[in-house]
Image (cartoon, rainbow, N blue to C red; front, side, top):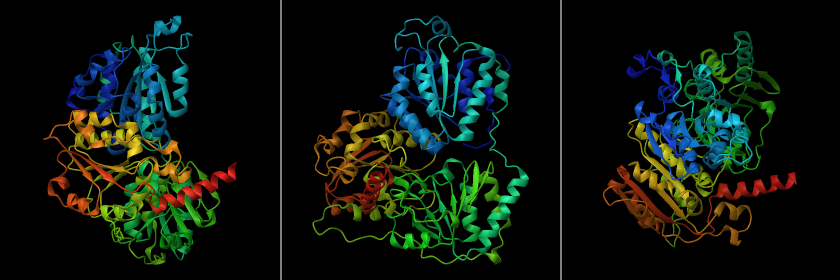
Length: 577
C-alpha cells in the first residue's frame, strides 16, 4: 500500500452526498483493497450490496475465522485488507484471526454490521446478542486487538471517523474495527470528500533529534571493526525495505535475517549470510553475528520462536536498534525518532572510507544426499526446494515443521514470504494462502503462490480449499503428511494420543470441494524419485492451475532448527515456572 492514492474516475464525479456504505467501500478501494473477505449475516447484508457498486469483489469464505486468515494473507501481499462480519456470532468467530494480524502487525480493516442505533439505545432483546441489552461487549473485546475502534453512530461524524480509522490502520500497520449499524448504512455523507485521498504519511521525526541520533549512529558505525546488519519483521511491516536494500547495497555489510524477517532482503546478494535465530542457527551464522562488535538491528521482534527460546547471545552494548517509533543506540533510547528518517540519513551520510565491511562467505543451500531408503526427509527436502523456487514467488509456511524447515531454503530475488511465527495459530496458512493468491491475482502479477503445510495444521483450515477453487486461484499446495502435530511432539508428548490426527484422504478433497480436471491437479508423492520427477515437470512448474501435492515424510522426522528451538523454548518456559 503506497502513501499516495489517486481518486479514480468514479470518485471524481461525486459531488452529491453518498450513502455511508458507498463512502466506506470507495475509501477502501482507494486504499488499495480490491477484494473484500467475509461471511454474510443479516446485520451486514445491505452494506454488502455496495461492494460491487464501487468496483470491489466479494469473497465469501466458509467461516469467519478462515476469512480473517485470508484477509491477513491478502494484506501481507497487497498492503491492506478488508474483512466484513456480522455482529456477535460472526465477529467473535473472526477474533482469533484478527488477533494474529494485530500481534504480527498486519493492516486489516474489520467492518462489523450491527443492530440499529435505535435497537442499541433501547437495549432490545435481539438475536446474536447475549440477551442482556449490552451492545458494546463485543466491541470491547475487539478494542484490545485493534489500533483504532470506531462506532459509526452519527452521520455528521462518520466520514471523518472512516478516514481517521483507515489512516491509523496504515500508520500503525495493525487491524482497525468499524462498527456499522444497519440504520447508518444508507445515511448520507459528503461525497465530494472522496475526491481528496486520505493523507498517508509516516510519523516525521523532529529534525534536530533525528540529526543527533544519526550522528551517534555514524560515530559507532565508523568506529566498528566488524559491523553486521540484522533484519527482522518490523522492517517489512513498517515499509522500510527500500532503505534496507539501499543500506546493504551501499555499505556491502554482511546481512542476516531472523525467521520472521526471511525474504526481507535479497538472498542472492553477495553479502547475505543466512538466518540468525540464536542457538538454532547455523554455526557459521552464530559465530559471525554474535562475534560482531556492532549489530545494526532493523525492526527486531524478539519473540520466543523468532529467537529460539530467547537464546540470542548478543549484547545491547554492541547493538543499535531501529524501530518505527524509536531508536536505541546501545543503552541510550531516543523515543519518537523512527527508523525511516534515520536510515535514510545514515545511507546518505555514511563515509565508506571509514567503514570496515568484513567479507563474508555467501550463504547457499547445502543439499544433502537423499536417505538410502528413498524416503523424503526434512533435511533433504528444504534445501532441495531452493532450486524449485522462482523469482517473485509468494511462499507461505505453516507453524510447525514448515516454518523451521524453510530456514534451510534459499529464496530467489523478489520472493515474498508469509509466516506466523509470533501468533502461531495452527491452520492460519491455508486461509492466508487463499488471501495471498487472490492478492497476486488482483495485482495482475505473474507470480506463483506456494504453501507448505503439515497434515495436522491443514485439517484446521481445510475448507478454505473450496474458496480457492471457487475463486479460480492457482496455488501449489505441498501438504506434508507426517501423521500428526510434529511440532507439538517435539515440544512435549512424542507418542501422546493428543498429538495424533485422523487419517484423511487429503488429495480427494480437491474433488469434494468442487475441483475439476482442467482447473486442478492432485498428486501423491512418497519417494525422492517421485518428487524429483514432479519438480521437473514443466506443467507443474508453470502453476497455471491449483495443484495439490500429498507429500509423505517420516513421523518422527523434523528440521534441526525445530528440534533445537523446541528444546530451548522448553528450557526458557521451565525458568519462568
